[in-house]
Length: 452
Picture (cartoon, helix red, strand yellow):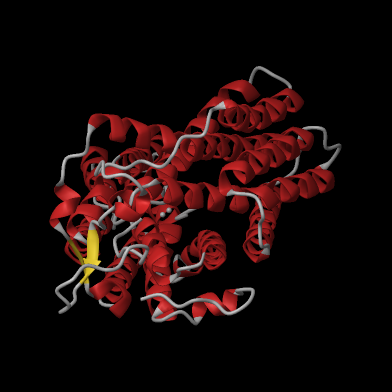
């Protein structure tokens, strides 16, 4: 199920891979739901309860269960395969979103009921981003082509996070905000169904190996190997979360309107998209383990410099420069997680990186809110940038660990995949052939609600 790229692979070569357009398009349709959901739920709950505090609390409940249970849901995909795991999750998730929409359709809904439904929906969020990135691994057999696939995936996800709120803004002109929640439910249901029915995914099934117990030492080694991408991803998330709030504080301090904030943050996304595309187009001669701290350093320095901006124009340029490193850093973190994870743990490895980013964003926003009220903005920007610098430094001084071998049988070539393509052939795939089980840049990171 893989096709080698001839010469220097391009983004067009990624989309020419067998079933790539169909499979990728299906997940983008489903992931558009995540881009629409945050604003839809915020508007619907605010209208239903009349309280911004209630809306914020309910979104926090949704985000907490979505983010922190992401590795658990990814483990279910690794263990049972995408078709058996993702489709029930998507149906449950869509049903709960519909229930939330019905409950919030008219004013007067009890906040505790909306909170309970939102928390349950977050717990059932299907990990479409991690699953698609695992399929990219199976569709590609060359590392440069995989890098381009991950970069394309990350940039497309960035565009969904921009277009989702715009679609909600258009929808609320003709329908109640709860209608956006229903549309989100339909998108994730249809997108997930189309994804699992794609030939690239349809025949993927788990094997008994996924349930085999791994030696504790091998598990510990795997956890250590995953520390680098997870720590850097968390640092990037903390910096991004802080940046959002600090940009708002910068504009408020200089008596600018909310439209200025939107333009500055749009520059962040634009810079991230450009950086992601260029990162995927470069044939790197240094490994992901070396590139990742360097990209994190670039982000940290650019963010620290943003605090020295004399006005909004300079801030916009500085934020765009910071964004230039965001998508490459996250893409490289996912690539490194994929490299160090054994085949039967790839979906979980990507989910841990995704969880680190989203948790970092939430934590960064909260901490920045406290600091902005007590310290000069220049210091706050410098502290936000220093978080990523410290994460890069911590990972640079660590002695590199080899990849985890949870099955405890030696080299990566001896790892038997946890998910395999159904085949009538009685023999196993030859050594070195790609496995067919799953792994995520949802994203950025992202999967607003936190990208699952």
